[in-house]
Length: 151
Image (tube, rainbow, N blue to C red; front, side):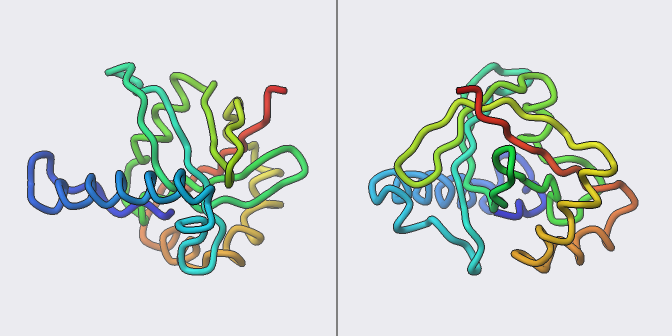
């Protein structure tokens, strides 16, 4: 899921967003991804990271691309000028868990290098065209993260 700009903490929009994410996660888990397994036609997984500061588990639905090594995610934050919290969490704690359908998989996150970014970016834009729009909104280079299964 392309994460929208972060609402102000404690605001109504933030509270609604948190409820929507919890509902999405629950529906995804209960249905083994049959419901909530796609967003706007793109495949979706659940990413559980460890908070960089809090150490708490955080789970978000995100659009992914299946790769030859694992799963690729885009840290777009809808084109905001800073990285999404889940990306910052992965930088500090790269070992995490993804749920794809009914399978939970232990993975290690790696921000891809320039050549791999160039290879994956067009494929990611193909499955979710707004990524190109998000890149135009910001001067930062939107990172692509590859999640590599540990088993």
